[in-house]
Amino acid sequence: MEQIIPIKGNVSFPLTLDPGVWIFDDRRIDLDDFFSSSPQPERDTEQEYIKSTSKFWEKEIREGAVFPPTIKSEKKYEKEKVLTSTFGVPLSPFLKNAVPSDSASQIVIETKDGSFSFPLAEADSLIMQFSFKGKPLREDGPVYVLLKDGSNRDCPIKNVTAVSVQ
Image 1: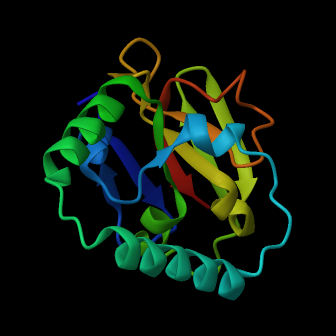
Image 2: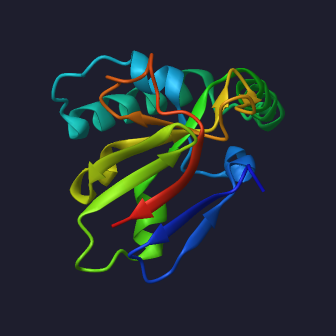
């Protein structure tokens, strides 16, 4: 039971989270890519779409349609990525499912060493890291809590036991 994290407190629906299954969750974030990417300048997505579509059709006309068996290689790449990358999931979807009451104003991350408070409005800035280089966080986990801005990446909140909404 020490791998289960409850969301409790001032919520309509208390939840229990199992980080062991998040590796299969589509909401997972590759934290290596997430924190290494520098802020990108504004892009014109319509122009990018037109250019990529044009490039695709130009290749189709020149070389003809090619249908390589890429599904096997994509599965192999995804499997290797899961076994070697560091992943996390945002906390906010879980909080939305728990439905904090209107009087709730803060989130308290409870750990074995103490507690850390954040305003409820900043819930979108919290990420729960559940693996490091493909391995679950067993020693001081089951999750680390990180800020999206990366300010506590070197010193995350560890030994999380519960998330309490107050």
